[in-house]
Every structure is written in structure tokens, then in C-alpha cells.
Length: 64
Ligand SMILES: [Zn+2]
Image (cartoon, rainbow, N blue to C red; front, side, top):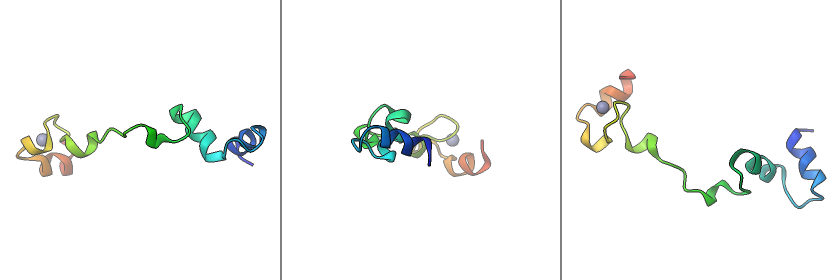
């Protein structure tokens, strides 16, 4: 039994193991309450926006 399952059981079924995990990790039961930051999608590794970086593909694939 995992740590999260133990805590879920201790909550008398109010929380699922997934919710316990999310509470510990994100501070909320459902991380979708936060809009995840899509920084990996929109910024090149050199710091420019993907749209502004002419070498975004090379920068990302070469690790800059
Ligand atoms: Zn770049």
C-alpha cells in the first residue's frame, strides 16, 4: 500500500489516492484548477519566443 493510499484510507474515503497525491504536490485536489504554464511550448531554449526565433528548431534540437 502506498503512502497516498494510506492517507486516502485515513480520510474515510473523502479523498482518493490521486487526490491525496495532488494535494501534496499541487496543494489542490485537481491540478486542472491551475492552468499549467505552457512555457515549453511557447519559448525557445535561447529565451526568445518560438515565433520570434528564426533558429528555434536548431536551438531546441541542439540544446542551444
Ligand atoms: Zn532560439
